Amino acid sequence: GCLPTPRTEGEILSSPNLKPFSFSELKNATRNFRPESLLGEGGFGYVFKGWIDENTLAATKPGSGMVVAVKKLKPEGFQGHKEWLTEVDYLGQLHHPNLVKLIGYCSEGENRLLVYEFMPKGSLENHLFRRGPQPLSWVVRLKVAIGAARGLSFLHDLKSQVIYRDFKASNILLDGEFNAKLSDFGLAKAGPTGDRTHVSTQVMGTHGYAAPEYVATGRLTAKSDVYSFGVVLLELLSGRRAVDKTKVGVEQNLVDWAKPYLGDKRKLFRIMDTKLGGQYPQKSAYTAATLALQCLSTEAKLRPKMSEVLAALEQLEAPKTASKHTQLDQQPIPLPVQKSPIRQHHSPMHLTPSASPLPSQKQSPRAY
Image (cartoon, rainbow, N blue to C red; front, top):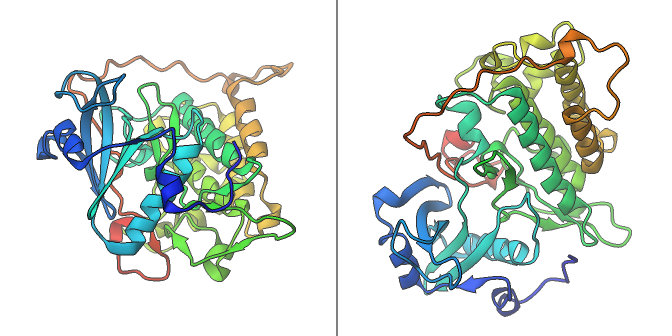
């Protein structure tokens, strides 16, 4: 898939891959957006659970047909509409197992809605940072990192490169098998073309995840996404948020706090998530930490490409060559299989406010 040059709103909305829904259809699908259907909310608006017919895509009565997530934007004028349109533009054309599938949209009067495939396990943020029924095992964390890396790699390697620009734990959604999918393409940008090295743009994104050179200059490259990936990899290793205002001093910023430990085999355990209970292969954890450190290089050109990051992570999941002297610490300790409670804990799609221009700290502290 190659993205053509910028398209008009008419062209974007007539995408053959997307269904235009009427507002009344989506009202029916979500039982009139009633509170029981609410999956989550953020700076952009609300996400509701809805039901549509698998074949006709018409609204059905709840409990029958296919579950969807309906994102209803706050009517916030042009910026909201622009991001909504960007999302429709990209997800209407790009299809990949690690990008969330956009089924359709609604643009009626002031109403702007998006209809996505439903992601039953919610966002990575929910699993890492909220007291859920069970913490994510090492194997699942690696699977999530690989899925997210596949999604970013796909975007970066398109003939017309796409820079995602808002890679963070709350934008990584998980299906029933913990396959990761990138959601929320409102800030995505076309990468540089011709002999240009970067695109210059207003600094948008989320504090704690954004690359330093991008925050400082507004110069955006695919390597900006690689930095953000390094931050999420660090969150997966440590179970800590990129920015945590409840902590004191250097510990408020995950990268600043963790960097000194990442390259040291003997000290790495100090930043590993205690919820893992020590059940992780030390060699793999160290390799992942080293990879995170490379992604977090202050100099963009020293960061690896996403395709290289992906290859390194895949190597951890299924080492091509078992080392001649298999060390005990390489074998993950089998985890007891816990039955999850019957009550399905549906984690909301997005609970963090949507990204905002970075320098302004006006948004609720949750985003930062």
